[in-house]
Amino acid sequence: MTQLIDTFGRHIDYVRLSVTDRCDLRCVYCMPEGFNDYETPDHWLSFDEIERVIAVFGQLGVSRIRLTGGEPLVRKGVPELASRIAKLDGIDDLSLSTNAVQLNKHADALHNAGVSRINVSLDSLRADRFRAITKGKLEKVIAGLMAAKAAGLSPIKINMVVMKGINDDEVEDMVDFCIEHDFTLRFIETMPMGDTGLEASDRYVNLQDVRQRLEQRFDLIPGVMPGGGPARYVQVSGTEVRIGFITPISQHFCETCNRVRLSAEGTLYMCLGQNDKLELRPLLRHGISDEDLQTAILDAIARKPERHEFNDKPSQIVRFMSMTGG
Image (cartoon, rainbow, N blue to C red):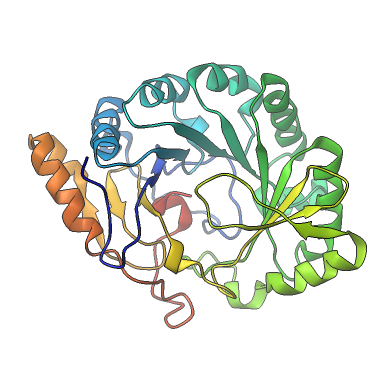
């Protein structure tokens, strides 16, 4: 089997697949207030096109797929798409990133379709603060989390973007919440992705400092967590709860990067912090063969950069996170 090995020897076995750029929340670090420049649905890849592309990735050795957005559950039929992807040769790990607003309605169907685990964005446990950050209702997210737990999705990972002066005083509370519910917790550093109106440099929190804070209250021991992501984990002693730190700024993990991102309209991004891309939708809609599609993907992977440039060129990425895919 041909495998996706880039020019730096990294094995690319993970595709983060966005199914929509739309979202039912409006997080301050993801898109600016009043933004409505979404792709029209006929520009999104169809489920047939998605299945074909992921099948080719599977033939090239990709085994992990994560469904993302925007918010993936605002697109109709995502459990059906998940079922189709889960049946593809080579794909043995199917997961979902969500804000959990609609998860209460879909948790059972997603689990039955073959989604094994989920990541849920949750930046505050205070209803008023959650609304200020996301314009949404915290109780819907909590209901979605409990539905996911009842459906048997596991592990459930909570993703918290830590922002100075906004929610950095809640990190201990979030650890307590995850201990109570047996969730995995991952803290994430803010990244300069587009002009959302929230200056990332002003709100940036170095997660090394957060870890030192947590060590004052919790007995943290080395921990590991299966998965294809970049988090570095510790475990809360006496529990099964793991805490991950995703540090693209303070400790970049580019040397082990194993992923690419496919946006809802079919753009393949080799790096979150670079602008190089491959437009797959025109190729698909002009009748490209599977063999030529493989060649195009292999050529794109050969252009995957060694590292991002968030530190060196913080204003380089003008697209928003919702446009790229989470």
